[in-house]
Structure formats: C-alpha cells, structure tokens
Length: 459
Ligand code: ADP
Ligand code: MG
View 1 (spheres, protein in one colour):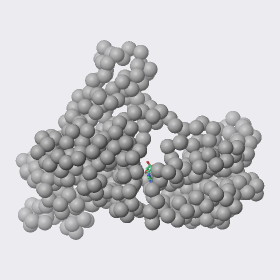
View 2 (cartoon, rainbow, N blue to C red):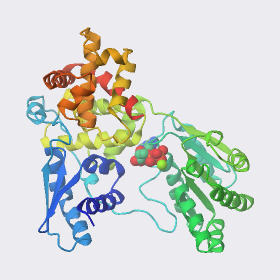
View 3 (cartoon, protein in one colour):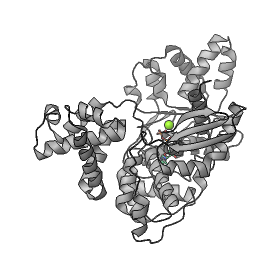
C-alpha cells in the first residue's frame, strides 16, 4: 500500500465516523507527506488545522493508522503553505483587539467521533429526528406531508415523494420519519435504503442467484424508504426490481417514502410505469431556507453542539450560505473552531474573511478557464479584455479578482497565474492578490461579489 493509499483509507474511516461537515472542515485539504521509520507526516493547510488535528483527532488518527500498518507509532502534522495562501496569518492578533463581549461557549460535541449511529437492520441513523429538524416556509409542505404519512401509515400519502436540491434536508426528513415510526410502532419493520445500495443489492442478488432472498428482504417490510432515487436513472434492472417491490408493498398498503434531487418527471431514463407510480401519491418539494430560518437552523445546531454564539456572527454565517444547509453547518463549525482556537470573539470582518478563505468546497471541476469565464460573466466584461493590457478600472478589478481566485482556489504559482492572464509579470500578480486580500478585510461589496462569484463557480 502506498502512503497515499494509506492516508486515503484513514480518511474514509474518519469520514464514516463523523458528520460530513466536520470531515470537510478538517480533512479536506490534508495529504500524506512521508512515512519513515514509523513516523507519518501529514500535510495540512494552516496552523489552525494543525493545532486542531493535534489536539482533537490525533489519538483516533493514530489508532486507525496502527490498525492499517503495524509499524506506525507516531503522527506529525506540518503546514504546507503551498496548499493554501495563509489567509489566516494575523487574524488572531487582530481579533484580540476587537471588543470581547460574550464570546459564548464552544462545546466539544462536534469533536468526538461518534462512531456509526446507524442501525444495521433498518438503515436508520438516530441523529436524524423531527426534534432537531427546523421547519420554515421552504420545507413546510414536505414536513407536513411526512408527518401526515407517519400518523396514517399507508393511508394518507402513498407513495410520498420528496424532492429538493442537495443539502436541503431530504435525508434528514425521511430518516426522521423512519425513526419516528420506529418509536411509535416498535413492531413494524422499517427499511431505509439509499437507491445506490438498492442497486448494488440487485446486482449482487443477480450475480449470486439470490433473487429470492432479495425479494424476501425488500417485500416483507412495513415501511420502505428510498433515498436519492435519481441514482436509478438509466438502470433498467434496478428499475424493474423497484417496480415489483413497489407494487408488492403498495398492494399491502405499506408506506413508501421516496426522495430525489428532482421531481419524477425530471428523472431521465426512468420507465414510464415507475414514473406514474411515483406520481400516483403525494409529491412535495423542499426549497431554499430564508435568512430567518437559516439563523434558526444555526441556533438548533448550536444547541446540539452545546455551544452558543453572538447573534451578529450567526447573522454573518447565515448570510453567507444560502442554498445548502450542509454548507451552512460546516461554516458554523469553522467559526466555532476559530473562536475556540483564538479564544476571542472575532470581528465580523474576520469571520467573513475566515469563511471565504476556509471554504472547503471541492475544486475538482474548476479550471482556470472556468474562473476567468465566470469572473468576466459576472462583471459583464469581455474575456479578451481581462487578458489584455487594458487599464480601465473595472477591467483591472476583474483581472485582479481572477488572479486572486486562481491562487486561492487552484493554488497556482505566481508565474503561472501571470501567464494564464495574458502573460503578466509575477510582480503584477503579487500586487493584484495583495490588493484583493486587503479589500476583503474591509470592503463589504467586494466580499459579497467574491462570494457570489464562488457560488457560481461551485454550482
Ligand atoms: P439532503 O439529503 O437533501 O442532501 P441532508 O438531509 O443530508 O440533505 O441535510 C444536510 C445537513 O443539513 C444535515 O446535517 C441535516 O441535519 C441538516 N439539515 C437539513 N435540513 C435541516 C433542517 N430543516 N433543520 C435542521 N437541520 C437540517
Ligand atoms: Mg441526502
């Protein structure tokens, strides 16, 4: 096993053991530098992550590593500045001079590795409940429909089909339904399954001639919950089995709850007979939460984490993350981490900047071309002008933002950034990046614009 593979295995174990948002926050930008004489050296993007991993996760990481490789005895974390320009450099000093009000308390809840709370028989995770699910106008309909079907299993809405974009609470809601049913009717057999798992089970059953077992398992349940149905698009055999499972359960008035990132009619390559089954019950969508609801969700998350936070700061976090509750939660964790590490109440500017600079979205599909395109589109400036030597103010600004983002997101070297923007000198690039970094400390408009550009990029 190469050291990179070894670290990948550690990461996949950690990922299973903690909320996704924490995982993204702490492990997204880590890699293994070397393994020598039992000493593993891990690259981390900044001092903050280094201290955090050392303090909070070190023991678990070492345990996992030792399980994988008997010879390992120690782990060290070093900061690799090429991973990310160190945007965090001076913020702790500055925040100390900002007014220290009630910093609030930062619980340790998030830091523990809770292990898998998933019940093997039902597939339900006890962390999803109605109690900790915030209802607002964006998800009211879906919530009401789910509650009604829980109260009148197999009667009110069957099937119940919930759809909405990623990170908006579909899994939480339908898992909560399962947990609620389990506590109301302990004798019922409930099965929650990801559509991907269902697909794998179909394939496995076919390969190993175990179709009878498969049917027995899926057709004997009282409540059948399938998540992320869009996954079965184009999968004929899976669709066929799902169709028969569906019919068999439906005829017996068993409750069926389904979720997908889009409505049935928008799932491509879906057999008509399945589509019409899905459309035969109740369909409810989940939209995007408004600002007040996002703040309410943050407050709920704080309760779970046994932490508290200044309203002004909650407001900033809520304002920065509009369309994805998972990211909203990740941002909250990062801010709590910042406070814990500096032991001060950071200013609004620092929090904004921190959120921008630690945003952990995946960069997989973003190229320098994308960045320049999106920036030019955002400011409505011809791409050619950005690459030219034109000194008009708005063009210079778009050019500087492009440079800043090439550095921040893609971590390109200064000369290579210069080259991609029409063969500019690397000192021009340094100046541009410095200018934008400075602007981000004080210029509300700039912060907002860059936030929007990033949203477009990551969409
Ligand atoms: P989806 O399945 O739609 O991609 P999830 O159900 O996984 O989204 O939700 C993402 C994260 O946001 C989870 O941690 C979940 O607990 C949280 N979340 C989503 N909606 C709510 C809500 N209404 N109240 C509280 N937390 C929520
Ligand atoms: Mg989900």
